[in-house]
Amino acid sequence: MKFRTEIDKFELKHKINYGTKIFTIGSCFAQNIAKYLERSKFRVTQSPLGISFNPESILSTLRAYTLQSPANLQRIVRRGDSWVSLDAHSEICGSSESELLQAYNQAITEGHDALHAADCLIITFGTAWIYTHIATAQVVANCHKVGNDHFTRSRMSIEQIVNGFEQLFNDTLRDKRIILTLSPVRHIGDGLIENSTSKAILRVAIDQLCERCDNVEYFPAYECLNDDLRDYRFYADDLAHPSTQAIDYIWERFIDSTIDGDTKALLPKVEKIVSAAAHRPLNAQSEEYKAFCQKFLEIAKSIKEVDFSRECAFFEQYCHKS
Image (cartoon, rainbow, N blue to C red; front, side):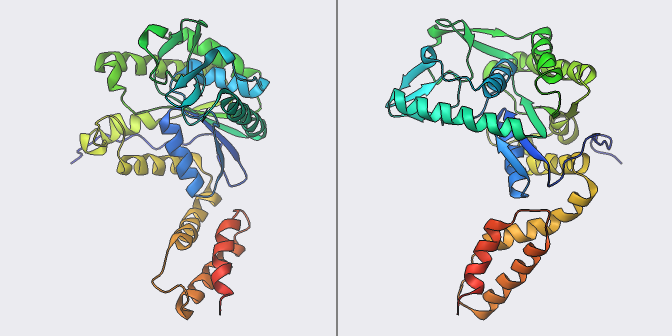
């Protein structure tokens, strides 16, 4: 008997390995995948300007990185004791305007360098709903809880999304491999009906981009949660975000479909080394723990494909203690 519908086995054409430089941008789900990639020691950079939920803000951020565009002074606002930009997440902030500008422009530089070096981009769309700043007539990445009277709310069309990204993918990013994903996070604040329409628009736009751009593929994170797992026990307490168990499952499907065979075979060893470096013994001065560190130091040094410099430095400090 079958009690759930599972997504058929699939594989992306372009595989990721430990030599691949990855750049992630988009909703908080992109951040989740980036964290899993980082833990598995892949070469990954998250968008320095932080989370972006809608395609227009993601597109604007990618263009800003490409052109190294400085902060727009008209889009800087004060929030409590901090200054923030409507074009960035609240983690990009400063106690003064000049401090914010420094943080923002540093993020732009880092983003430019990482995007230029990247072989593969993982882009996650979260919502088609956008907020336009009335004073500058531009879509914002984050409203920062500024009053609603400063913004107008609208919904992007399929054509708007496709036209903007098709040009970017076929021109500026034509040499990059692009993996598009649709965030399974439910934007309950928009309303369930509005969220459903929003996700449908994004999914069709992604499908059209995959058809029109040879370097673009789709990873079905959205379907993994909503059509495969399909149960509230796989959601967090807010009933909107996927649970840790669900993200683990989606990560497994990501490995199966996106990582090449040799790299996939290394992952269990990598996990053991990372876990060993995170382990804290009752007695770090014991001969037993010294032997433990020596063992994993040798294993780490034997794997040339992965940068274990941080883990090796940790093991060595205990191997050399008398």
